[in-house]
Structure formats: C-alpha cells, structure tokens
Image (cartoon, rainbow, N blue to C red):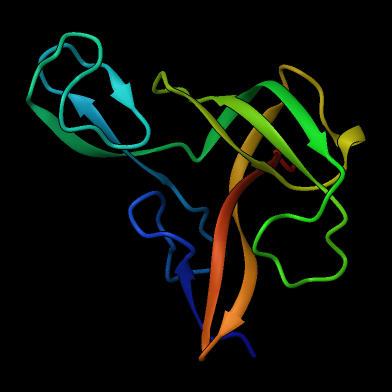
Length: 139
C-alpha cells in the first residue's frame, strides 16, 4: 500500500486528499492587470505590478507542442520507464506551461485536450513522492 502522497517539490501543484480529484497547478494572478503566471510570481512580468494573488490553474488545457525523450525519467526508480514525453500546454487562464506527458507518443497531437494527473515517482519512508503530468482527456 502506498504511503502519504507528497509532491516531489512543494509549491508547484496540489495533491488532493481524494485520489479521484485532479491536481491543480499553483499559480498567481496580477491584481493590477489580470495576467496569470506559473510558477507563482511576486512581481507581474507584464505590468511590473507588485499586487499578485495565489490562484489554482488548470487542471485542463490544450497541447501546444510536445516531444518524447527515449531515456528514463530522472529520479524514477521504476524499471518500466524507458522514456517520457514533455509537452507545452496552454491553460485556459492564459499561461503556457511545460510539463511531462503520460502515455505513448502516438497518443498525442497538437491541439489535443489534456488534463493533469499525479504520477508516483518513488516511495520513501512511508511517503509516495508524486509528480504532475498531463494526459489526453478521457471521454
């Protein structure tokens, strides 16, 4: 049985208590101009405003671009990882994020609707370390 799920690095995405709920990216929105960012920012890159607020982004988006790397994912201890995909995903709130993709290269095409999910990377001392990745939206 898996232990408590924790992010591989805190501050970038949520880990819902309910495993059926999708994770969300932790971003920020400029209170002055409305621009959204990921990761979070203290100063707006658009208007240089200093009034940013934390917001949840996603969990769905549209695949803008992608590539597949045929080498094990760094930090993974699972032997079946022989490669992984990386995609640029346009979120409805505005930012374009770059994150890992789940599945096989033939599952993807530019413009595909994708959604976030958590993927266990390794277990250590009763904790299951997870990453966030995108996969095609299930019908």
